[in-house]
Amino acid sequence: MIEAPPPAVAPVQKTSATRRKLMIAVRGLTKAIEAQKILRGVDLDVATGETLVIIGRSGGGKSVLLKHLVGLMQPDDGEIWIEGENILGLSERKLADIRRKVGILFQSGALFDSMTVEENIAFPLHEAGERDTEAIRKRVDEMLEVVELEGQHDKMPVNLSGGMKKRVGLARSIVRRPSVVLYDEPTAGLDPVVSDSINRLIRRLQERFHVTSVVVTHDMKSAFHIADHIAYLHEGQIYFYGTSVELQQSTDPLLQDFLLGRSECGV
Amino acid sequence: MTRFFTAIGAAVISLLTYVGELVVLGVATFGSIFTQKLRWRLFLDQIVEIGLRSQLVVVITGAFTGAVFAAQTFFQFNKLGMGSAVGAVVSVSICRELGPVLTALMVTGRVGASMSAEIGTMKVTEQIDALRALAVHPIDYLVVPRALGMMVSMPLLVAECIGVGIAAGYAVAIGLLEVNGTYYMANMVRWTQMRDIVMALSKAFCFALLIVFISCHKGLTTREGAVGVGRATTQAVVDSSLAVLIFNFFMTMGLNIVFPAGYQ
Ligand SMILES: Nc1ncnc2c1ncn2[C@@H]1O[C@H](COP(=O)(O)OP(=O)(O)OP(=O)(O)O)[C@@H](O)[C@H]1O
Ligand SMILES: [Mg+2]
Image 1: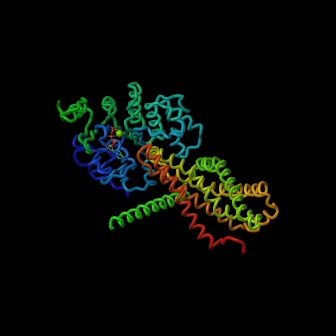
Image 2: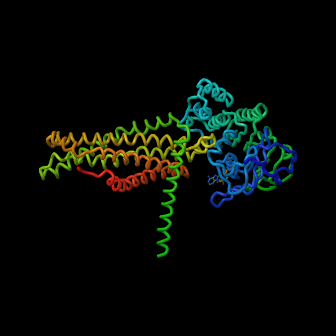
Image 3: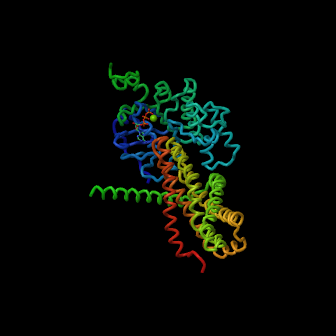
């Protein structure tokens, strides 16, 4: 079943033609929900160990794209390769193997609201068969420290602020040390100091554990800080793909507007 | 006229689709029960939730049904001088029909509704996606413990309802209506057979499956926020109740061939 994904088509590798070992390869992904065409042929490569930042207008389909990468949504057409394995058409049980490798942080946090913070973070460990409560406890403490929520073990998700939920969700998605992490707006709603520490965390995971990251964000400062590559999703396609420097030097009016936060083309 | 048939056709197709989806869910659940590791803690939680927390409802339902049924039967039978036959009538009807059906309806309202609301809320708040993303199959985690909990609890609840109903009938007939206790008991024991109890428990088991699969299915297919959860919950209760009543008729007719009612 394991074949190499077909070579990427333009515009994906136009700007960085070096051959890289691919962790994620997306080809011609299209998705319509009801009559709305959300993705119209997305091509995207993520090399092993790199951090790709996806930016784009609100409602542009970034969250939908991330959900496709772990098989939570089924595309109408196209291919998704994770470590050389095409995940489309895999059954829910087969997908579980992929999902053990790929963690995802939901935009909403998606915490289990009947469980405490501690139980939420311990959940993936329990499910992985870990039974040593002492080890779990230690790991949870460690994760809470990483996301700067020490001592919040027993709070219920309803009693957390938006930013805290986000960070608990983040802790839950990386607690099992997946080799790929998809972050849906990890720093949205966080104060600048915590945002910065989350950005450092993403960097640190990459440097220390060679985690491959895909980060959806509206926060351009953190995008430039963490990205090896940046992809701009526009009208269901990858409109731009390149490094931070290439993006900043781009003279494309659409990108300029986005970077400068202007609402009308060139006005 | 064609419009009419198109409408009927559409209704039939959607009913068949619905039944098909329920069957698929049922098959997947039993598949999971036999092939996946059971989460004991969740299963025991469900037994507490379904079995233990339904005690009051089931006891009251059983007691007052048994009591009123004994009284009504007595008012009729006493005119014929058959007051002591009330025990047999009460016990056989409670075993065969009233116990299973009323327990199922009460459990639908209490447990089915909360199942669909809980799972539905998890669906609309992306918690089910979060489960899936953490490599946990929602059927293993959500449906299996509830299905097993129901399969274990329902027969016990029905048995309890029947026991309480018969006892209440006895109390009313002997205590209030002054029927002869010895004859009452003798008739009851003579006319109530093992097969009546087997029938009660088989019905309980089937109703458990109907309620749990309909409720979980409604929860898992919930859409559109709080309104959707409300709608799913209502539909789960309505559909489960109707399914119980309809199934009950066919099970009575079918089981009556295997376990005929009455003295032989
Ligand atoms: N389950 C769904 N059913 C119907 N439409 C959906 C669903 N999920 C997403 N959409 C639609 O898909 C489009 C893209 O949504 P998505 O959440 O991916 O946007 P986004 O790029 O993540 O935006 P934001 O930056 O605001 O998070 C939106 O128009 C949204 O209405
Ligand atoms: Mg989004």
